[in-house]
Amino acid sequence: MYGTGAKKMLNMLILNILKDYSDDEHRLQQQDIIDLLDTNYGISCERRAIKNNIVSLQEMGYDIDYNKGYYLKNRDFTDAELRLLIDSIFSSNAITDKEAHQLVKKLEKYSNKYFKAHVSHIHSASSGKNAENQKVMESIAAIDTAISKGKKISFSYLQYGVDFKLHPKRDIRYVVSPYQMISNKGKYFLIGNYDAYDDISHYRLDRITDVEVLTDPRKPMKSIKGLENGLNIAEYISEHVYMFSGESEHIKLRVHEKLMDTLIDNFGKDFRVKLGEGNDIIVDLKCNPDAFFYWVMQYGQHAEVLEPESMRMRIKKASEAIFKKYNKDSINIAGKSYE
Image 1: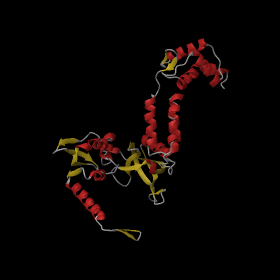
Image 2: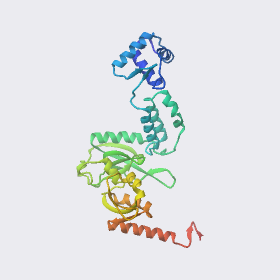
Image 3: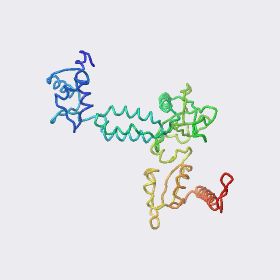
Image 4: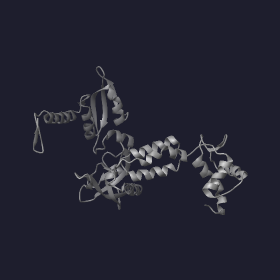
């Protein structure tokens, strides 16, 4: 319950009630607001006080409308925007379920009780992802501090072992100049420079732990190969489909036109297309060669690399190796032969 001094904040309490209980489909009469003030805050007031305080809120810029009842028209986020943000949080592989639910609860404060009721089922969802690394949010906070201060960081980098648990990838700590954190395909990455080299490196945020912000200034971005002209995030993501490090190269390929959706999903719209024979198209794009190799191997029956020759040979060798594995008359697993 609120003390007698709470009447001085009556307009803010009325605003809270409008935020929590009103929208276009749920409008409040003055008596409704009086009842909620009594129930939620233990405060009694007259109808005139309700009207005067709502006028005060309107003069402060709050978009409160009256049409068969008061309701708050505009909010920081619409229901659709909140749903999009919540879906993005739960589809992310970068944070634990516990952290995801905590974030969603914070976002729900920007909605009303009717929206919370509609998404109540979300709180029972559990993907079980990333339960091993409980320090993702701490890492993000520390890296953000380092980026804003222009400092290097050190950290331990984790990888899964055959026991399905995360272990340090190596004994020594990584020392990195951090430049940007980006989200790509549900994962969160740090783009930086490993101290021993002069090119770009990527690190998954959910694999980083025990981050320390160092006193050493980070390397200037323009001194890093590939970042001489700064970082265009959209372009960078389109050229690094699976976030492999290294320089991009121009690649020409022939594909069936039905792959246009897939091409745009993975490479954006920054590539050229010419009509080929039948339903084929000739595509000219720029991409990291390692990332492109793994992408194109998914579509071997529907795609042929035309240039460069080095990529054609790489795919040919990989295809021959796959053919040999599947062209055996029998296989041997754990000492047992299968025809």
